View 1: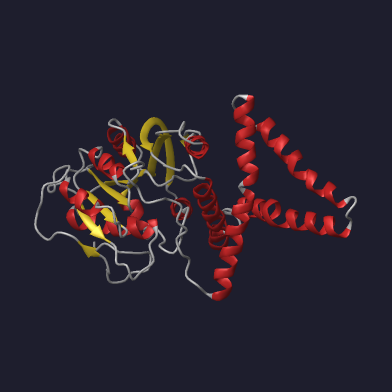
View 2: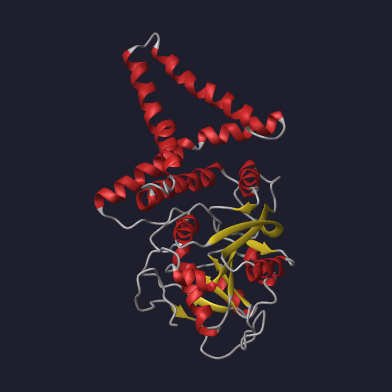
Length: 363
C-alpha cells in the first residue's frame, strides 16, 4: 500500500532526506511480524532530540521528521542514524502533518511493520516500554493503540512543568484518547485515514474519535512510557499553550461535537462561560451598578474554592492547581474566539507556538 501524506490523498510534497542506505538505531530491513518502527517529530529540540533518538533502540526503522529547525537537529538526527524527512515550508506546520509524513516514510522503508511508536522530540522513551506495548497489542487484536505513564523530567524547575506532570498523570485501563507519545497498530492507523493535518492541537483526540467509531479500542497501561521535557519556564509559554488548547476544543467540537460523540463540547462550553461570558457580564454589571456590580466578580473566588476542595494532593498543591485551572479559562476563551475568527474569514488554522528555541542554557 502506498503511504498517504494526509487524510485526503495527495502527492507528497515533503523532502525525504537520504537516498542511499544508511546505518540506523535499529535494523533497516527484513522486519519480522510484530516488529515496530519509530517516528520522532520535532523542531528546535536541541539536546532533547539527541536524548530522544538515543532511547529508541530495537526498532525496525527510525524516522525523524523536522519542521524547519535552526539548531542543527537535522544534522544531529542523521549522525545518529535516523532517516530524516524535512517538511516543505510552503505548507503550514502541524504535528499531525509531521506524524503522517513520518508514517509514510516508515511504510516506504518497512511495508510490513506491524506497530509504530510515535515519540515527540522532547521525550525520552523508557527502555522497557516497547516490549510492554508490542506485547499488549499482539495479545489484544482489537486494540488500536496503547500508551503508558508519561512523566515530566523537571517538574521542580517551574510551576508550568509541574502542571504538565499533573496533566500526564491519568487513569489506566481502557481510555477514550491518547496523547502524542503512543504505540499504534499500523493497520488501525491506515484504516481510518491517518491524522487530520488541519487540526493544530489535540490531533490525537480527533484521531481517537475516528478509531473508536471504527470499533477499535485504546488502552493506557501502568508501565512507564517516557520522560517529557516541557522546558516551560515562563508564563507566556503556558498562556500560549493553553490558548492553543482552547482553539483545539473549539475545532474538535466543530468536527465531532454532534451526539453521541459530543467531542470537546463540555470543554468548549466551560471556556466560553468562564473565559468570555462571565467576565463580560461582570464588566457590564460593574459599569451599570457601580456600587453593587463588583459583587458579580465573587463567582471567581467561589469557583477557586470549589476547585481547590475537589483537587487531589496537599492543601498548597490543591490551591495551586485550582488557581491555574481557573486562570486557564481566559486563554482558552481567547483560543475559542481565534477559531471562530478563522472560520469567519475562511482561514486555515495556524500552529500556535509556545516553545522557545533551545540555547546552551536550556537545551
